[in-house]
Image (tube, rainbow, N blue to C red; front, side, top):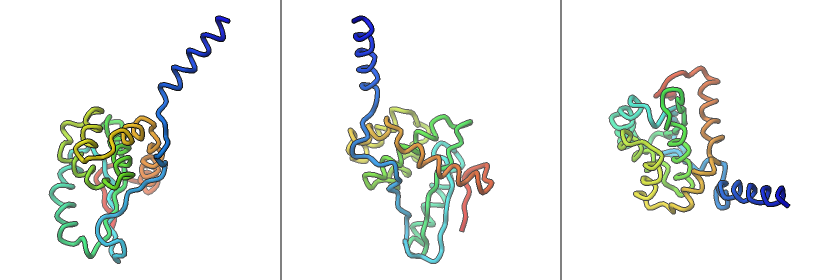
Length: 170
């Protein structure tokens, strides 16, 4: 009887700590910015907690997309440098959760603008600022369903020899 009760309590605790993945996908929903059929593709590997990436995003990437967005396809790839940026992986996963609701680029922009405030609570606050379904976003983030998507980008970068951010390929 005692074992059954303990097992039941433990099972309930474990189930309560798990986030439901109903309505969320492991796959990335992010789309490139600019012209999806452009001949020129710019691919950026970036880290949302990297100060250099922030500067480049605000002063180089944004103007390039504004001025040449109809002639280029701009792709964003995650390269979270976890050893020096503890919130890079959670922020990357959060951006992928935002992508599921069609707000990947807006989330990226907000993350870079508010990079100094990057924290676990900030990730959900930014979702609210973007008028996302915050319950769905929170479940997505808590489930870590986007971890493999982000790490696939990271591994792609490592496979081609990248060690720092930001890095661009044209």
